[in-house]
Length: 301
Image 1 (cartoon, rainbow, N blue to C red):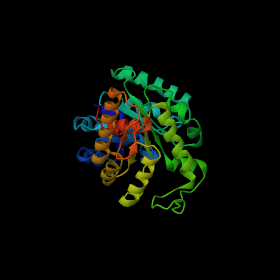
Image 2 (image 1 turned 180 degrees about the vertical axis):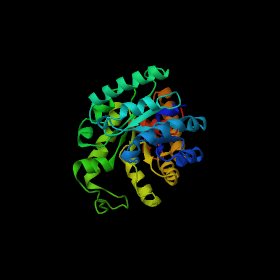
Image 3 (image 1 turned 90 degrees about the vertical axis):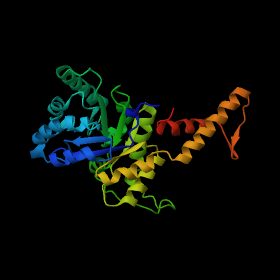
Image 4 (image 1 turned 30 degrees about the vertical axis):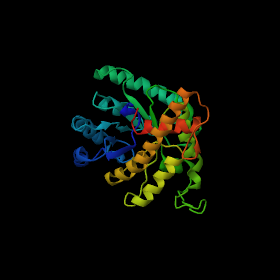
């Protein structure tokens, strides 16, 4: 069995300034939660949200939730106080927006190490989920993903990237003959982050789909993300969790075929056969690797 912390498919945001929502999150289907101190919290409520999230972390952890609170960016001047307030053995890691380069990650690591020592948490145990959501971050994506052993996943943020570039989020469905929405302004950065994460051995998480009452649009968007290499997607509403899980979780048919591919490959190796096939398809190393990836994503050894 693979490490369950290495491959979350859905992480659900919960506004950090809403105690009732945090209490309600105990019953959400989502295993992974991101109590948010950043974009969902108005500037005048940042300190209150920090106290509210810190007070609710033990409750959520006791309910079996895996927590990666999102703190404010390094540039905001609030990140260190956020981290000092939230660090504990009850969280898996911290999520942080607008990381632009590896130097910021180094500064963040120092803050985390100091906070861990003060809180009695093993130094180095708190993971980092950086959001790559600026032009600088996209250019530096690989360097960021490789900059720390704490980074086991990375997220692309389309809204902030669009704002940074000064572009509108426009959908063009004429680029392909499918119903999958294509956003020209996001095509390169979205792919670049997924590729950089894969090259760095980091789990890539796609940007949230903001139309939370549009499940079909969410499904199309998630399928596009999966097609370009993302392994999961952020959710902003509990109703999105089931759709995202259904897209990124390997199907029974995919799992069965992957097992058959690996079984045939193993038999061929024992027999010393170099050429093998399954249902008329040649089974070569890329096909074997895809089968291994499917089982890995399904949490099957």
